[in-house]
Length: 199
View 1 (spheres, rainbow, N blue to C red):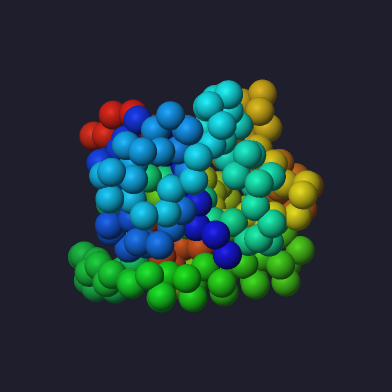
View 2: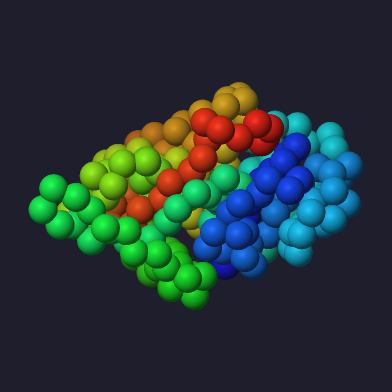
C-alpha cells in the first residue's frame, strides 16, 4: 500500500506527514524536490515538470506505481481519527500511523470483496459528519482528500476535469460498479481554506 500525497508550492507547509502519517510519499514537481526535502519531508518523489495539474498528477502516480493499493490524501490533513459520540457533542480520538494503515487495509479488503474500485473517508470539519451507527454508505460521494483506489490499470481520473476530478471518478464508479465504499466511522479534516498553493 502506498499513501500518496500530491503537493506543489507548499515546501515547509505539508502537514499531513506531521499529523498522522509520517511515512507517506509526497509527490512534487521535479523543480521543487530539493525545497521539499530541505523542509523535512523524507519520502519525496519527483513528478516530471510537464505533468501539470492535480488530475494528471494523480494519474501519473497511479501509472508509475505497481502497488495494487494506492491511498490519496491531501497535503493539508489537519485532524483525523475516531469520534466518540456523546450527548450534544463528540469527542475526538486520534489514531497513530499503524492504526490508520490497519483501517486502510480493511477498507481495501471490503472494497475488493464488493467488487468496487474505490473507498473514501468523509472529509468534513464537523464532528457530526461522522456516523458510526451507520459506518458505511455505498451510494455516496468520496473525494481524494482521502481516497483509496484499487490500482488495477483501468481506474484513472478523467483528465477532461482539471478540478473536481475525484467527484467525477466517484460518480463513474457508482454507475459502472454499483457503488463505492464511503467510510463514515472515521473523521478526516483538511485545512483547505487557510493554505495557499497546492496542486
